[in-house]
Amino acid sequence: MTYHVTIVGGGLAGSEAALDLANRGIAVRLIEMRPMCPTPVHHTDGLAELVCSNSLKSTKPDSAAGLLKRELALLGSPLLEAAQRTAVAAGGALAVDRVLFSRMITAQVQDHPLIELCRQEATDVTALAAGADAIVLASGPLTSDALSASLRDLTGSDALAFYDAAAPVIMADSIDRERVFRQSRYEDADQGGDYLNAPFERDEYERFVDELLAAERVIAKDFESRDLFQACQPIEEIARAGRDAPRFGTLKPVGLTDPRTGRRPWAALQLRAEDACGQSYNLVGFQTNLTFPEQRRVFRMIPGLENAEFARYGVMHRNTFIDAPHLLDDHGRLDTEAARAVGVPVYVVGQLAGTEGYCEAIRSGLHGALAVAADLRGVALPLLPPETVYGALLAYATDEATTDYQPMHVNFGLMRPLEPPVRNKRERYGAYAARAEAALASYREALDAVGLMPR
Image (cartoon, rainbow, N blue to C red; front, side, top):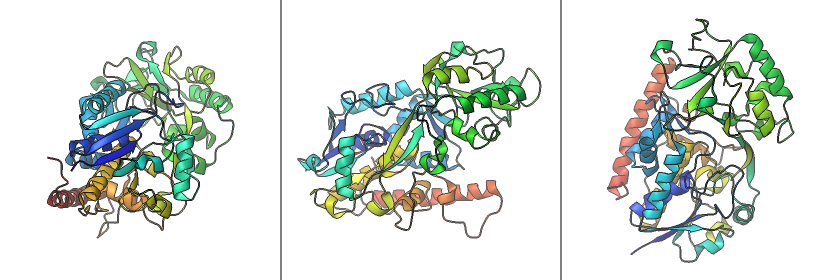
């Protein structure tokens, strides 16, 4: 018997779910509204387009982000494999050439015999049930107004929202290499490194902050902390919290030595390669709400970027997500009377479900695919242990006791405490990693026992 699943959204979560389900022999109809319905932040009609940054974060095995990649690798994630094949140098992080990455995923989806890619807007969740055995909503943070309205009918409550921001990208040949130097943190300058660094003297930093705070913004309001996802705070909002806040965060100079002075800069902006050929660079941590002309004016005050040519300006946009702890079960299925009346199970994955981060979206799509496959085949999906990093995030995101829910990255703060406690931070993170590895091994065995591990 061939099952049919309709997935809405061709981003990271939707593409991952589509490829995983199709690889299991389940027919998929993947609905993506672009290019018919463009968004304020997408630049192409490609699937799995990365809109904020090209970094998928750390690969260190004793970090939460590194453990998440370990989960994806051991569970056979097609998008993680594509990311590794399109990687660009980024020190201890996994960053990709976002154009090649999107093209690879788009080609895999278009060429898969069990996936039908439909370029249209989905407006009614109930209507999607026609001909489907299950629905997966992966429409992301920029879910269209019509689909949002339909989703509100199913949830019985208004969708929640926060503001997210993306950093600018500049052309490599417009960077002053006499001032900007190549070095990764805590490495000798003569060893090079994967990052470029624009160093500030104290007076340069003070003038920059003055202009940053005075610059014209697209959304002219002082955001409260609850309005902004903390990991994507615009640089001007960080500065508004305190003049020195940027240099203790995004612009921290620790581990860097300016070869021109032989000492640590007062502050430093890091730039990360945006593409495999190093033709453009991302201003790391410089998400912004400034108008385009102001970005040109203010960011060209950064030492070494006086003649910067912008390949892409930073943008700020509204994100939509649901109150997952009170709407989803622990498998990501929408658990309301109205949703059950649709006639087929409705799953919500990715940023629409309130997970935040690229790899988190991929992992959410993979988890949703496993849940759907188990449901259709009539087997019990093994419980993802909370000792794994995504298991901890999922437990938080589906716990009814979670109040004032906000999107969350994987992090060790969500993990169950160690018994006995470990005081040393490095040893504690290593212990978390060892415990997660053991839990993941047991989970893989449980998946294999019910025929859900990819062959």
